[in-house]
Image (cartoon, helix red, strand yellow):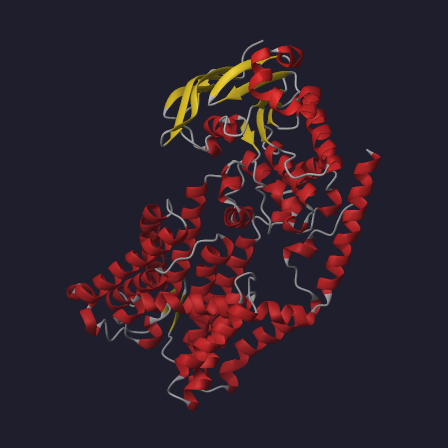
Length: 345
Length: 251
């Protein structure tokens, strides 16, 4: 009596698999037909996707709402920028940015994860503001309000290969490949024993503790991984823009992954990615018609949060799959069987 | 018979209220013990102190001769003390199978694995399936746990409590809110698991029929203290117990 286990672990149904292939094909061929602005926008969407995926590991999977993620994003960006200015190696810059953010996240996480709910959120907010003021005030290192300028888009140095990234197309491919790797890694993570443990914390910390799980240790792991992802997202930014300025460390910037995740859906793996895309599309389109685009963005988010808790992705899922009905039917069947089985015992 | 758990002079107050007021108690392995007492007698507080949900103001807890008074809950689970809760506590958005997989993975020390696919954890799945079979919930394995009926969720919680293979397992009102039929199912399961001999159960229960038919040993609590303890027949005849507690229900 083997029940199909894969059905619940989010295996892609075949239409979805085709759609995913088409999307990948589009992304890889995009430089052939799209202009620089389109590539620039896609890079930003990918960066926000990584940022939001890390955030959602914390929020959607572990149940911790952090308002300080911009701080780790900024650490990644600033460390990467400093390295690139000193040593022209993109790989070194990215690795340094990720590690820097990870270390800061592990340290601040250690101080934060003993608290939950609103206390945790407030602590992350406070730590984020401290990072912002460091970026703002430590002029010798961070350049103060001018930020760091003239950051080179250093070549990608791999063993036996040095690839110049002077053109936008080349850098686009670097970001694309790095993003896909990051997405793939997160996808594996949420379906691993670690991913299950984090979801258990979200559902009931008490039960998890009394099931033998160290709640603090696993909260810290989730927080650090989210910090690493924020750092990676941040580190991809300076080579694109050639500058880093303090606003990316500001707490209001922490709202970006929150919004992307809410719009796309917190309960699905792809939600933060779809949300990042929609967020940039909404901004890009509405900005053309009105300078009050923030009001419209706010209205859209309000409608989504009130009307469609699961976000856009779950709306699409429900529209595509009449599976929900079948699932309910199956459940009724199992309940009957289970009830019958118990009576005979 | 060597003792499984020893509690010495345990105290815990909430403000002015001494919820547990100097309890000394030993539990022997293999003896299904029931803790009874009026509401507010301190039964749940006692369980919390022994399992690590609360830290005591005074006194000590020894498990198999080793002191565990100040250990956090997850470490006591690994040593072999587990529990269920009075208010149902499961993982509602995980599947039924995953609810049991988590404690099994924790026992095997595999919860930290970031890249191994969950489906590949064959050993853990096999064990979680065995428990599901005991519970009669194998057919519901891939359903979200929150979609189960109340009775089945109670069964599942019992399953989570025994999944770490505890030597000592506290069940805090495992049949609260159940229909008589479901109640019988839960109690029958506890009896079966207890007879297997791997786990010593301590059960808090208000249904006196259940208590007197199921338990080998009964501990009566009142106002944070142990009023009496002994085998069911003895407790039934104890006059003090009858006036304080049984009398209220049996008159």
